[in-house]
Image (spheres, one colour):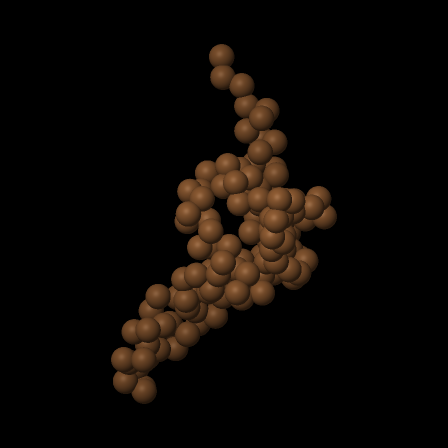
Length: 130
């Protein structure tokens, strides 16, 4: 998603280009892109000049959405919460932690992440070892 965001407005990105840029095995990336496409986050164009692009603006896609897509609930204790007795005092604490974590991930868009990624690239390019 970060790579597609960085290429937003610049045309299609092939699986090979994304895989090389992000050091992701092609087969693994294919399954990721399929899930993203099936859930409306990416679009693909077939053919010799084909590739992938975001289905909606990166500024409108949060990190939380994509994390939940692939990982499920953000807070692992959510599953355990169902086992708490109704008056368990820890249930409120888990709920508060889950809300806080969701708020953080949902407040960061892929546009934000791509900007940070570009800053990291620039910082790496400017680093010289002697």
